Amino acid sequence: MAEVMEQVMVHNADAAARVIDGEAFIITPHDNQIHNLTGVAARVWELGGEGLTVQRIVERIVEEYDVKPEVAKRDVISFVRDLAQRKIVTLK
Amino acid sequence: MTRSRGWVLETSSRSQDALDSLIKQASLALVPAVVKLDLTYACNQKCVHCCVVPERREDLSLEEIRVLFAEIADKGCLYLSLSGGEIFLRKDLPDILEEAQRCGFSLRLMTNGSLIPPEMIPRMRKYRVGEVDVSLYGDTAEVHESVTRVAGSFEKTVASIRRMREAGIRIKIGLIILKQNIHRFRQMVDLAESLGTTWNLDGSILRRFDGSEAPLAFQVPVSELADVVEYRERRMPDLKHMKEAWNREKWLEGVPCGAGRAMCTISPYGDVFPCSVMPMLAGNIREQSFAEIWDHSEVLKRVRAIRRRDLETCATCELAPFCVLCPGRSVLDNGSLTEPSLFRCSETAIHRDVYEKIYLEGGSCDEPRE
Picture 1 (cartoon, rainbow over the protein chains, first blue to last red):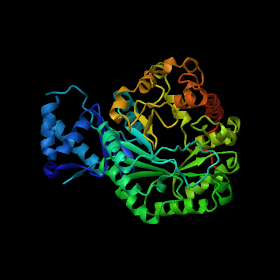
Picture 2: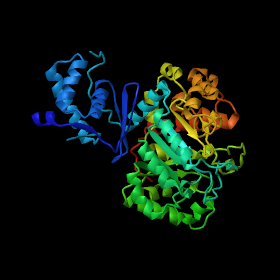
Picture 3: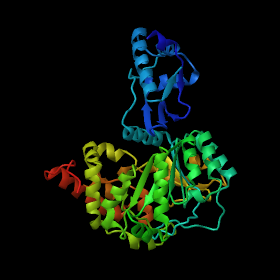
Picture 4: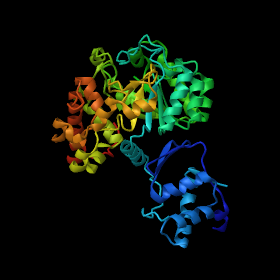
């Protein structure tokens, strides 16, 4: 878990993406699938565009949302792993 | 800052749901998320049912297309379809694709497949081409070419499809059903599947954009399309989902479709239309910027103002749960945005009959194929 926290989340540069009224729509080129992220999920993905570590993303989410740090950490880690598995982002 | 939205960290995993969300969200925000650009109306085939009417005006130049791409990207376009005519007749297509890639679109190419240079295929992935849609009119050269009226077109199209599949390009074959090939539609699906592609059966033929009804001579009577609709539903259930998800109050409050709200079509001459079948000119990008047209066109405002509730005949129709409303088809067929296309109504009745046959009369969509 500590290892993931130190990694930087980066958007897949080959994916087409737009944010419309707070919802993110991302099309991954390897499977031509469209993914829809809303609410906090869209925000986490958005923060991936700022070149932040997962640790920093968790901190930003805790600042912005009414959520306990341990809950944010657990959920964000699980979520960014899912995004990486779908090739929506990469963890470096 | 604390945001009040719910703590839900998940990705919508069903692509159709995500696409529906995109259209819905873009429709509400008036973002042209889905744009179709016809690059040219020139074509190397002479399909009997073609609805395109080439004009003497010049096609948009590469420079004009560059400006357009920047503008639609700025307005939020995500999906860009490039169509024609035949897009591979444009010598500058690689430059156009490169520019589209640079603007960050997910690209869909629509082609007859008979002119794709083999050396171009490996580059399609680099250009972020998500899908290539190829039209096919038969499972044999004889049937296919009775529609395209070009000898050798079948072999060329099938060869291109094979090459693209080998290169890992996703292909959807549009199986266009006409009087010439309705007797072979099952074999056409078999061919598509043997080529490793997805497919769609489409029996809807449009009159020409100049109003000529000539293409309709090749339209299979709707009553004879029941077998096609039933076959499609058994292979790719859709009507069941439509019926189960339908709610009259929500339906009445919604907009008929994303035309002019989440999508638009641009002709090779720069004319902007609400969608690919709605012949209502919203403006021309040679005279105004795309943003000016999108934000201020009176035609688009008219189209956007319509709610399903305003469609007098449709709002009370008992077939509504089975209907894919298409105001564009209404305008094309009878010149009215609000009066239904009789073709669509007949097609919808077939949807209802097929639904009842499969789901209410003891059948199953999992029945083995014939």
